[in-house]
Length: 151
Ligand SMILES: [Zn+2]
Image 1 (spheres, protein in one colour):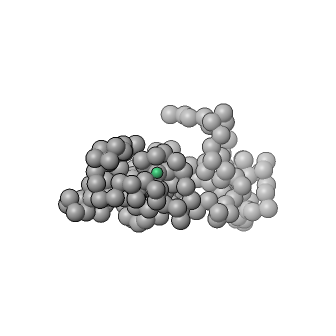
Image 2 (cartoon, protein in one colour):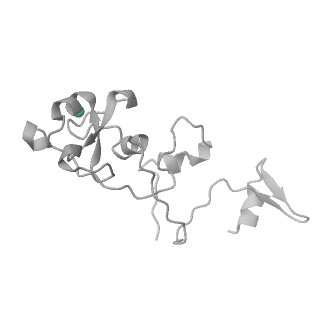
Image 3 (cartoon, protein in one colour):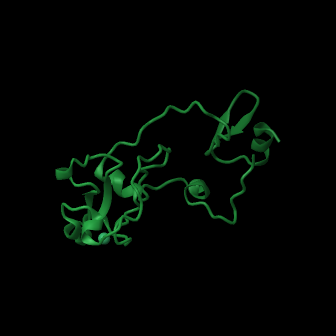
């Protein structure tokens, strides 16, 4: 079925009119195959590190609110550890204090996951409190039962 035919059957309030036709305004366009999106790196910020780590302390594995979290240098700065995606992890204040300027194994702690630079995706950093169109729901918070993957 073409979009023009679909528009006739589902004429919603949001339409674009031409002289002869009315087209329903699409709310979502899915690009199944498209490799020309500009590459954009995720900005290295405190908040984005928390987002990458899902607000989960990378030592104890517990989830916290932002104000209860710190950034931790996996390799401490005084041991030439850098401040970048590969050496910074989310840590709760307690674990951060315990680890201090040591390596995790030196104080009997273990890093849950080796930190990496996140791959850019359009929704990275999107705030959940920003209201979005209801019809976006299945894309932003997909229900596994309803998702159909086609080639
Ligand atoms: Zn912790």
